[in-house]
Image (cartoon, rainbow, N blue to C red; front, side, top):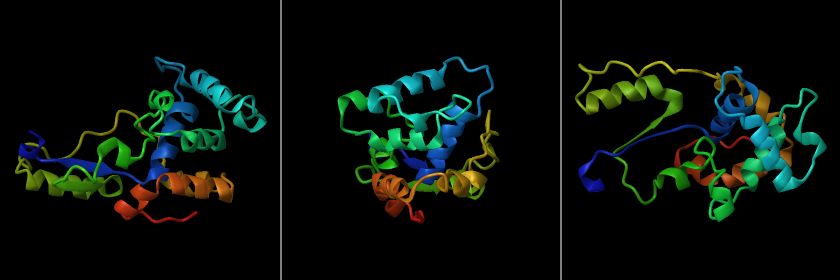
Length: 177
């Protein structure tokens, strides 16, 4: 059945996805969230690593370093990790299977406006849809990627890049630990 559909995939730099997920779920909170993800995540960190001094900063927020350590410690094949493997930080290779699915179009988040215009034209819907709707909430991760990367030690950055190496290579993202 999948062969009769047009298969479209939009990707985003793995590190930018993780920064965005961290800001959205742990840093940039509005107080109107339906679920207390920071408290839940602190429990996950404690269960995984035990009480760690660097996991929580002075404001009792989970640090970006602790978040990245948790993300890279997850085993995508382990049953116990499948529950906490949020699609915001799961590798595109395991989430969307680009080696097994012959996508007709792969766009990049970094070129969303241009790629979506091309996609609408290719799908012959440019008269119906002229632009994507604006995001409900933006955490503006793109300009902050370097700042967040610099918060991590070199060995932790290397571990991160190793975990997402297939996404970096497959979608032509620059490795810059």
